[in-house]
Image (cartoon, rainbow, N blue to C red):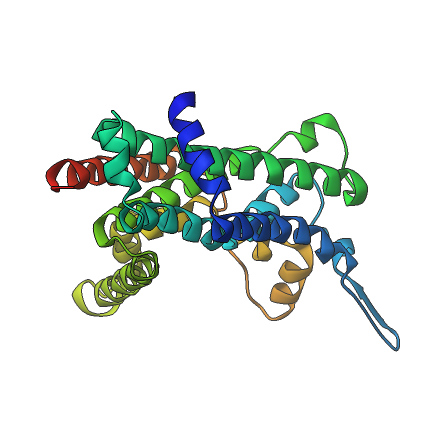
Length: 278
């Protein structure tokens, strides 16, 4: 495992674009802390975002993992370009000549995916913990360490998303087209959901039940939007006569669906490499 990881890390170290994207990604994760500095003072109206409870434990685990997952596209570019460069620079063929099996080649990419996801999860955990200690109104041990399942969901979400990107990189061989393929697949899922919702079943519950098995939708379901959990948002909604009834929990079957898709993407990636005449 470590031998395969070292090979990939060596390649990334010698790729300027990948280094820039990785650095940009982690700078964006750090920028979550800048949300605390957002203040509006307009006459008698004073608004400080950090005081709205977004950094309270345990809500911060939900909020920060949701915001951080938005930036995952930067690492996706690294993953797909990493695969595209193997074809462009012919390093894939050279690796196989040097004794690396096709299975080991795909495993080296998958281990890199896991490493990126793990480092990102640890990074978000540290940033969230520090922000929580500074701004949270609730600092008891039981509250701080509750809702940590969002960190697991974040890790699984990244692994699944990057594995999908790896598969597209193997399939299409060009990083720009692979990212485009991800976007096209998102559109396909959206159209399929719309057809089920308004044409085929004309029923939201049935459409949701089926679409939860779509790969991108399954990844999205792992961490639902956190904004309607804020007391300020609920207060405004109540004044307007609206009541939110959302399930924000991380469910085991949602994690299982994404893990199954991850296994499928890695298997298909290996099958493509194995079948091709390189």
